[in-house]
Image (cartoon, rainbow, N blue to C red; front, side, top):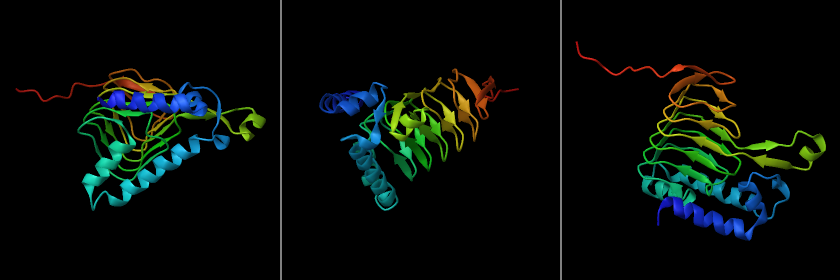
Length: 209
């Protein structure tokens, strides 16, 4: 069974059995704090993250086993450094060969897709939920997740923050400290808060002569 199928099968079961999970991944409004299932899923994911972070340097093989158990959609050849902190693993897909540096954080549920051969710098964060703007609905805990998608061969500098619903195209480079609030096209360098396209990626390959 492929990793993608494993994710789909587990999500399908959770969605079938729990309406709050279905609503979360359908990008509908939910009340996390009063949900019968969602806090259990985040508790489980954060507990596994804590175990990974504890054993990583003493038993890296066990840490990697737990990592793939937590994230069925993780491909092969992935490397990471602790600590990591995820609210969910079931909706996360990570492509082959991607590197996650220390202090990688995903807050919120729904789908998060990271492509293959990406470089994720230290202290990068991905946020998927938006709380209701209306004060009473916000007090009542209403929120809605929006999927985040990062293409192949993307490089995120240190301390990059990605907000709900953002897509970053293949080969893009996001400068350190940027806050990405809108989609970034493929093949560009983008920087700032809010993050904006600076220029196309330069061809800095060595030349003879």
